[in-house]
Image (tube, chains in turn red, cyan):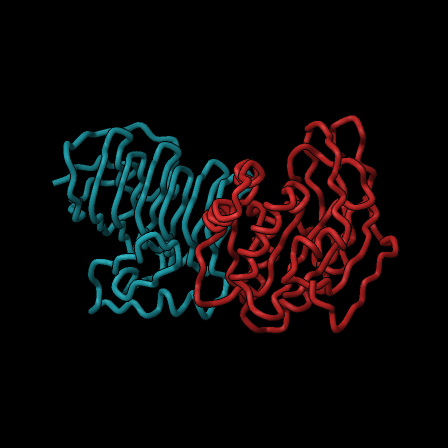
Length: 217
Length: 183
């Protein structure tokens, strides 16, 4: 990972989270998380310029409602459908092809912002590298990636969760009744190795044990 | 000539430009495009390949491949409907399967049972929880206007083909032209 000219990493626990703890019994409880780095992204969207925003997860009404206030093109990858084939592939070239096919087609207009809510936790290292390389190829210098990664939390739901923006400050985790599994707990160093084209712009540890990252190409 | 069954209104003659195989009447529908408004119906057993044009609201419960142009009217893809086409209409409601680009000069609504793969361009877009959507939603008013506003009536013609294998939005200069307000 390139050295970040403006390192502002803050791993202090997020004090304003209204999280209720994720149970260890499988049923995930509704959580509302204060996400300050997400807030900074929404602030940026309000600048008045046009943005191309890529969401790696599913489109949700709350996200559409929030983004409809801004001048943006909202692209939805629904990458969860490709997790299993990505993780199963060993060959780097074929892995890259799967990642390319799972993402929206490349366009002349570069992607400005990427919402990567929870997906990184479900990709193994080669798959993570392939996906983020393909995303970098759609971006430009300055493209921001907002990611949520299980870091302090040892367990996570078996499948990726849905996150809804409640407002420009808070994200809600949609509860799902699925078993828990061990979280890979990717450290910033792990991510730096897997994502060499990205620098950590800022990071915050949220109350539910997730690390909120803002990466920059 | 394709025959369409009427729902909810008077029996005005209907002559949309459609090429199809057998004409099968079907009254089976669960979706209601616009309460109280007359609409034509493509029933569940009907399969159309080609260009579909019309001057009235339309409910599709069958299968349509090609292009759909209802520039001054609304289109509903019902729960049984399967559309693989670029669609140009004033208002578009998707409650079934849709693959292609959607241009709604007024609005596009994606219902909870919908499966949509393609790009949406419209000043008002709504999406219900549970809908499966993969593609892009153009939310930039300027981009929406340029995509729909450059369609002049004199240019009205078959939409330009999209680049092969590209799901990118390909605004068509002749497709959703002469958009009028709903009455």
